Length: 437
Image (cartoon, rainbow, N blue to C red):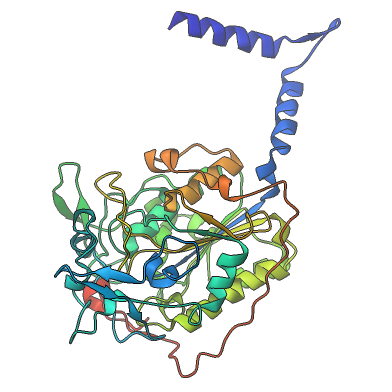
């Protein structure tokens, strides 16, 4: 529209030729003024963002009993009966299917009543998918929720399992992938015959090699000269399947991989030394990830160790930690996920915000997803959105109060986990391959 263009041109001329007395303000001084104004933005108190991604739990499975949250202690099964959510053991007897198809079946168009029909969900009447933990089982997670922020409407980005959801944590999309690849390892260095199901725009599903090349948050950070690291198991190690940048070709086959994708064990050292990058992703091996049948106790202990390292390090006052779980893992959740596109959302997963600037004891009831974390990073560092998902996601800044006195560190003790195993075997029918994880 001509009028709007004229107005924009006038504003540009004013900005470039502002006069003060007889002098003219240079474009350099204008830029410096904008930088000064940007430095005063409250969100700039956050200089380090940590995104920890654990495995395979729903909100009701972990926080269904949390006071004041939208949780459930019973659920509807396929017969229409309502059953209590049973006590889940620390080490589960097996994995449960959490594929795209299983999630669609369980959600049942929003009825949330067929979790008992997915493979592995109900053997000999044990209704394993309809179980949950209490505060006594995960006391440290409850302590974080009581002290900082718990979100009770945080949904997995995609109606399905780990591979595509981990891609959302770096790119606000999955390249169309909806399931795990059929062989390990996953990603761009996998067997040439490896395939993953990709959902096309017309609803058809095609098998494709699990290596994509879409733009990610790491690319945006790199272009701005901002530091980032992806802390993950290395090739051949347990949990390497969850190293998302292995599925992004221009990162996997460049110096970005060797310079920025580092062992998970480096995170504690970097936190203690005060050398955390601006953006950190952190994933861990299956035995500590809480992926069934792994010990929840051992997984929680590992998480506490990572967070304690940040809190005891010199950068606590400038850090925001986002802790979540990547998909529903086959477990019941009562809240129907909104249908935002052909890919999601999937069922709710737990989400905690841990920061000196988080609203204390706050429960965030807004609809959120993995792309909400990316949007927070983009807002903090003034980056453009990657897809419509992060552009339209609700803003996490509402869970922060940058005017409050900063919250003190909450240093927690790890627990004795008895004879819980340190390694687990992931079911190859759900994850491809049969390597011990």
